[in-house]
Image 1 (cartoon, rainbow, N blue to C red):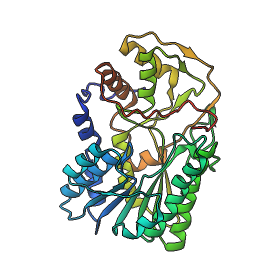
Image 2: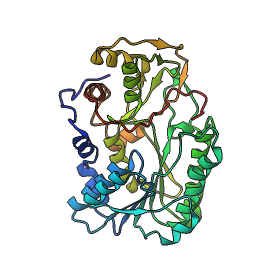
Image 3: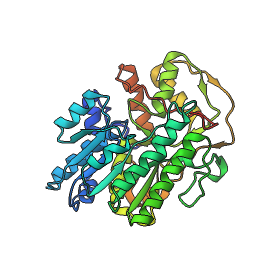
Image 4: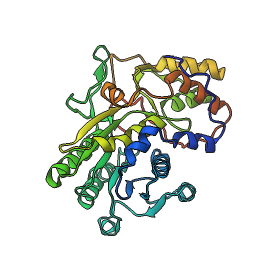
Amino acid sequence: MHGTGARQPPPSDEEELEALLSEPSPEVVEALRPLAGDLVVVGAGGKIGPTLCRMAATALRRAGSNSTVLAISRWTDERSRRRLDAAGVRTLAADLSDPDVYAGLPDAAAVMFLAGQKFGTTGHEGSTWWSNAGIPVLTATRYRGVPTVAYSTGNVYPLRPLALGGATESDAPAPLGEYAQSCLARERVFNHAGERWNTPTCVFRLNYAAELRYGVIVDIGRKILRGDSIDVAMPVVNIVWQRDSTAWSLRCLQLCTTPATIVNATGPETLSVRRIATILGDLLEREVAFEGEEAGDALLSDASECHALFGYPSVPALQLIRWVAHWLSHDGVQLERATKFQQRDGRF
């Protein structure tokens, strides 16, 4: 774990954190500058959508563009919606699971697709398949021909022997469990729609985005603070600072092709769960207990192609661990959305 940039101070509150997560790089500004129309974000109300929308809106303003970011979600979080409205994002309330709403959705020059369901899949498999495969059918049909970046997940890959390293974009998917299977279905839908209607597409396989209110590091840190033992059966993980993955995904609008381009998006390091927990324990001044035995394989992605295109993350792993420890020790707000990264059977 490299310590580059570790002297950068952590965000002091949620407003500062969101501003940091939403700050576009100059490359994002240039990527969105040619946009000849509005950017529609489908499923904008989740963990990533709000800061992605703010980043895109800021980039468009800096580019001198007249284009607008249109954020579509059910908006069960009214506070999040109000904050986006105040930031110059146009929010639209729609139940994306209802086929009848699509005729009324606005036109777009580009689409970012973030809709999906993960947690609560077990016991509600039909709902998960409708969210992860049905909504893509409806979206791809409505926005046929419009360049689309579709968020996906590294869960479509099988567990990888540690000696082989992470899966690359050329490795065949082999999803474990119904959540991962439904995510591969989402990819197949966008691929088919792209070829049928000549829709330029990029599939953005992300795992795991991390910030200070949720993510693998937060999950481990909160367990330590509760006195829970840390399961090390999933021995290692990939993570990436969410601001970087968000910026990469917006830049992927320049990579959309037919058939679809696939991009693995994560950090460059394979991080030991035991090591993350040990560092957090030291920073939080808590004893750490472990359970289970490290397996010889894990869910890992190789994002070398992504880094060759876009560079390395701006916040390295050790700095992010330190930031999370500071945030947790100061009772920073949480999103209450555990990653369940330790699941090895694909059941979420």
